[in-house]
Length: 471
Image (tube, rainbow, N blue to C red; front, side):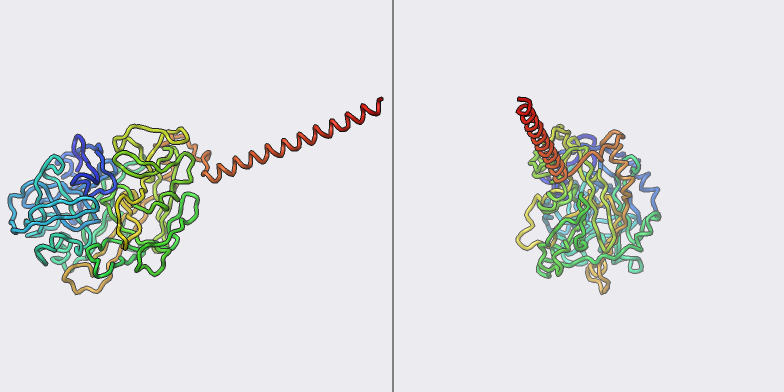
């Protein structure tokens, strides 16, 4: 959803509140024309749908519902489809529903209409039709791509009629693979693309993803099935911090056998990845000038110098996935905040890995939510396996990740964008190093002072002896 004026309201207002749950203030973007969008989509193979990238903070696709076009945010963190406005060629089921997100919900009538999505046609797809207003403008919505067990619509009208779109697509194409892939676009000096979604196939340029480790999707307890997400285990000590050392962490997920393995959710509905306060501090807290700050509309975030390069790496299935430093912080103007300075007097930027902005409850089923700032760095494949409702498949659902970020190229991008092409990153040290350097200087000064005092004392001693000798 990128409109020509204020385009995104995150977290506290209905559409983006519910989809991109870590920001809740207006975001500026540019609108791509429908004709241009269709040209992009037309250039892709059947089964592939182009995404429009709005400033690296939201990604939306065009679907056809009841022979009408809608622009929907794609969201791997939910499973239902809803649109605002009237779908003329639809059937009213006579039932209503509310779709609950982390910080908000939308309510409306459950209807059915023919859906066209990524080259697939799904008759009688169930969706929620909500009234359009100043926040949820007519013609927009959200398409959930997560496991169907969290569907609010199917809770109301049952299965198979209430099954989410992907479940319906997989069910009607038994001979095709039951996976979808997502490539989130980015804009930097060396890469500029919008991204895409594929269903039952992979992008030609990224077929290597099929050889990546299969990361089993972990399941939640049966009594919490509505909280099932696309989630996997991070390797033990699998988050390498800016100092090159693992960030120590103990999982709060009770069913996790190895508490050193964090359960992480892949959710492209979050602009800012959500982590614990201790992890966010371990990432940003050691930089000179960094400080945890409450910002209007954002809540608690780490603020750090814009010229500070931050590098972290994740490890899944024994493979390393470095994160682009431009995905580790962003400038205040991106979220319509005026420029500000850090505690060290430098221009301040906002850390993207944010301490949780909502309560996960006393028995959380995950430890982190890896949103867009992570997912831009990988090409992701999500195999539904035994998540398909009413399926007799025994295949375990899994995720495959293909790394897209080259650390050397990413460093050059950061130098170009944040440092004006002049690499000064070598001049920066961590707080611990800075403190150690200061202590070393103090020690040197102290030693020099002691030596000087002793030298003066010796000189005075011999001078006095000489004076006595002369007398």
